[in-house]
Length: 258
View 1 (cartoon, rainbow, N blue to C red):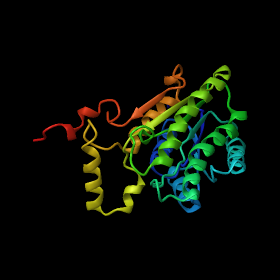
View 2 (view 1 turned 120 degrees about the horizontal axis):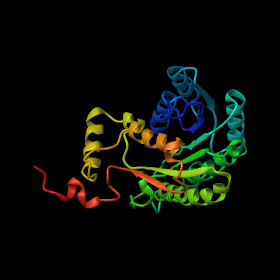
View 3 (view 1 turned 135 degrees about the vertical axis):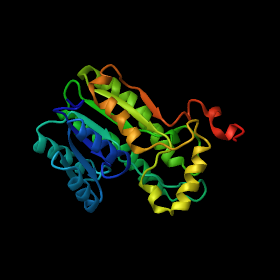
């Protein structure tokens, strides 16, 4: 038996990176999964790869009507909704002194407003025992330069999750936040092999476990939060970053390496 047998999951941003790895794992654990994204070609390719238990819907999380339509399609297709992984998000540099208003606002619109209205669209269909998972980021707290909008958006997600947990606890719906650190996602594919190696080595110096994470490692934590294994876990954050936030002085950069 799989840990998600009989469950139906909605994963926004499910056509790449952590969302895609999670979709694959959820299907392997018995769930039927609906993934959303903006790129129909990529969505169709992923759905074909993952098989009949995955349904792809082109949707924009920044548009509440689009997400309501996506949720309606989930329920019409599979008859229920048990898990919401509000994972879709965007990143853009927003250096102080030279950032356009439109760029800043787009990050907040997708990463904060979009997450809220994704959950709101799903809420009428969620029953006791349902799990809502939000995607945060260690960028919310690490002070990375030129990331004001992204950091603010992910800090907002973590704060919002606590409020949603308080509001939805009486209905038996759990809300938790998955907080990735440096993870190998498709953004790296835009670089050459040598550039990727240099970037990974740079990140690894600041991570106690001496490497970046893989999307599959994040997916396994999402599976824990989605499944009954976490039935008493509510309103919390799980940081998956190789120890960078909890034990920064354990990172190689602080030690004399052989």
